[in-house]
Each structure stands twice: as C-alpha cells, then as structure tokens.
Length: 479
Image 1 (cartoon, rainbow, N blue to C red):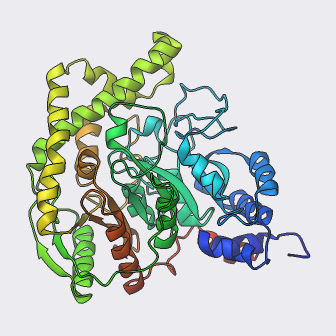
Image 2: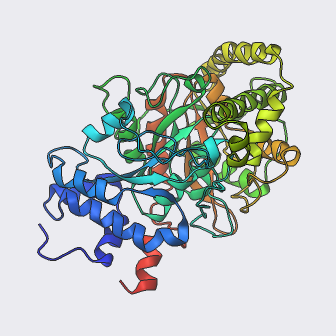
Image 3: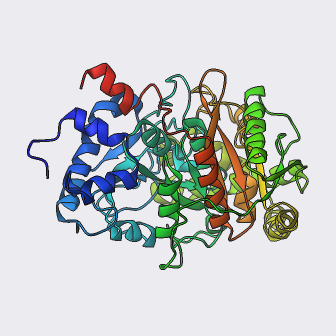
C-alpha cells in the first residue's frame, strides 16, 4: 500500500488506465480500493468544473462504500458514474429535469445491484438532457456538458455526461442507456466504446414501461472493449455469463451501408471513416460488401417519430399529474412540452403502426443477418455537432426534422431489439472522433464483442486523448 497521500498527479495517472488496469493496481497492492475512489474524486475536482459531465456528486457516499468494499471483489474500488435517470440508493434521480425533486432514491434495480456486487463504487450521477429526449446534453437544469475534444461541440446525448466523463478519464466506466442511439451517439462523438445490448440481454434496470422495455438497452461505456465486455457479462440475465476476452478466428460477412435511413449521404468525413472501417475489415479477411437497408427507412423513421412523441407525452402527463398544470408548464423544457402537444394529434392508429413495426422488424433484420452477420454503418450523419444545434429551446418545427436527420441510423436496432456497438476507429480532418457502428442479430453480442476486440487490436485508439482530459490536465497543471 502507499505510504503517502494520493496527489493529483497520482490521480491523473490512474485516470489514464481502464477499469481492468485500475483493478490490477489494487490487486498488486499498489493502491487500496478507497484510494481508487479518492483518485476519481480528485480528477473530478480538477476537470469537471470545465467539462460539466456530472449532475450530482456523491463523495461521502462513495468514500463510505469504498472503505467497506471487499478487496477480493473483481472491481473493488473502481469508480463509475450512474446516469441521472437511473435509480441508485442515496442519490437523486432528476433525469435532467427541473420538474423532479432532489429526494434520494431508496433502492436500485438489479442492474445496479450486480455492479455493486462486483465492487464498483458509484461516485455520482452523469448529466443528461431532460428525460433523455434529445441528442445533446444541454438541460436547462444544468449542467451543459462540453465535448472534451472541442468545447464548442456537443458530446451528444442522452448519455452525454457519461461519455464525456469516460473520454476525459474522470472515471473508466459510466452507465449509459440507449432508446434511439443514446449510448452510440455520444460514444461516437466522444471517441469511446458504446455497446447497446439487445432486448432481454440484461437484468432489469428501471421500473416497467410498455415502450421503454422494448426499446432501451443499457451498458457500461468505456475506453476499452474489455471493460465494456466485462460490464455486459456482469449485468447479463444469465448470472454465470462469462465475458468475451479476445477476438475470434471466424471470418464474417459484413454488409456496409453509408446513406442514412432517409437515403441521404452522410457528411464526407463520416463517409470516409466508414469506408476506412470497411477497408480495415477486408484487410483482416472478412468478406465486405456494399448493401442497401433491408426496409423502407423513411417509413420506419416516420413511425419512430411517433414513438418519440408518445415517450415525451408520457413525461408531460406524469409531470402534470405530479405538479399540476401550471407548475409543470414552468418546470418542463420547451422541447418536452412540444412533444406533449404533438401527441394531441396522434390517434390510436399511430400505436397500431408502432406495434406492427415492432413485430415485423426482428424478422426483417433476421433475414438480412442470415446473409450478412454484421451491418456496418455510420453512427450519426455528421461529426460532433456544435452546442446549441439540438438544444431544448430550438423551435420544435426546426428541431424535430434536424434531430431525426442527424440520428437517422441508430433507432433501427432499438426497434428490432438487436445489439450494436460504436467503435472509435477513426477521426475527421480536425481530429474529432467519428464512430463506426457494427450491428448484429438478436443474441449475437459475443460475436459483436469478439469483432470489436479484433478491430481494437488492428486500429488501437487508446493513445488518443481529448484536449480536456487527464493527459493534458497533467501537462497543463504541472502535476
């Protein structure tokens, strides 16, 4: 164990390590579980005032837990962040909204219980847009989260605080939830690994909801495939699930599509990144072929806009019931209220279309994946957008089409219940990260993670750090 207190320089050095390497420090006796947690709090002190990744700090709760965690647990003392919408005992669940009270949750669901059982220490909550309804983390409640690669850019959303914190090295792991791309979009914009598991892959994360249970996948976002693979296994429905730890020898048939579901070509830098990813897969011996989307993409997105409207309206209805109409109108953001208003024009026929699409898509994609085990595409239509592009006060008639144009790749896997992952293989001409998305059929997460390991080895990204990160904080502070 250490003979002197942790310095900021020590904490920043630890922050350069992924969760496995931080756990290895403890296993070798170089630091204690409590010191791993203390180091994360020092990094948050140093970097988060500029970054705005955390919506809530839980220093006392984290230090108390770290002091008592069993050192034999695999991730004892390793810090992580809880998304602001996820219930964790002793922390408020504000979901990025001024309408929520700050009363701490009394309990969490099986997802957080599994992570607690592995020894992880939650050090706080990550920022998110109100109720996760936007693709940029700019809640009026605050904080506005900056992209650590470029402060005028958005980290995306809704798991934007989580992605920014991991990219900057505040914590090696952060919870993300993905109902339309909310893990993969910020993972792409922040240059980290973002897995959306398939339907029924993880233990229960939140209370029951008819649409969210079908759409949302949850995982731990990280800078390494092995950390994400471990998190997936640790929270899998099968408690005996063993994490994927290496590439596979199997060569795959990979279909590549560049245009989004509207049929429109992406930004040139995004297209170039996907082509480079396809070329990399071909050099590794995979059979790579250009393909078309296996469905009418525009019709699908038309249905998905109605889904998003219903989800927003649910939030509005619940807030009206809790606060009354007048207080709710003042507390809710303009975008959320606009979705509630748009829902007034939807009839039950829209729900018929939604559930028909939910029933058809798994079969449609299963037929596609019988021919191509993997689908490679962009994650988003452009590189990381400027802050304000998808802010909650942008007029809804402008915001709705712009949002769905930018995120017109990711919702497909949410509707089909299939897994997908964003990998930070390449960057744009300015050095901003651009993720490549790999998607597979239901139940094929292990195949996806084995491919991710192979690509990580072939085109490693671990030496790339953003301007606002533990690497540059050490240099600038002289720590």
